Length: 175
Image (cartoon, rainbow, N blue to C red; front, top):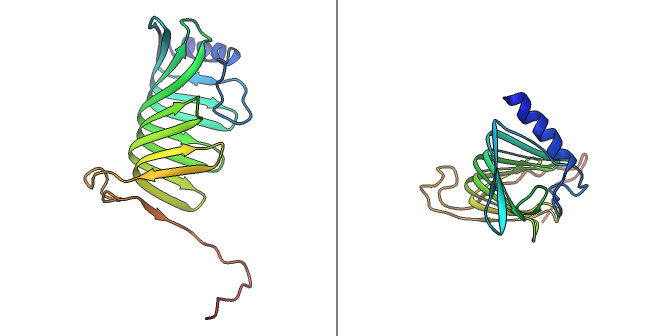
């Protein structure tokens, strides 16, 4: 069964839906998981993938327990509207890794919104929050606090640990 899904995933890579730009370079989207189902919804469709789902395009990867592609139109490839990921969500590009319990990528504004126990790692810098709004192609993010019970590390606040590296031979500042 897994072999059939891998073949299907490779076929999907040949038919990238209009507007699907997870990576600035664009290109084919490769999807793999344990099960997949295309569900017509009247004015659109949802393509659901379950079981250690991995989506990649260029140097960008999204992983989760379940990923739903919401499309305008009832046939693949339709126009991609958004991607909804649930359960152990990981978004990764060459400079950033973001994790959360739930994530939504909206094509119209090229925005990823992660919620739950969120962690963002950029180089040696680490941030935690309840909600993260990330615009990876612009290199921006906004972190939002949550309830103190959400995450014992953040304690209901946005928290960051920034790493500053001194230049070799630099003198410490004087007053």
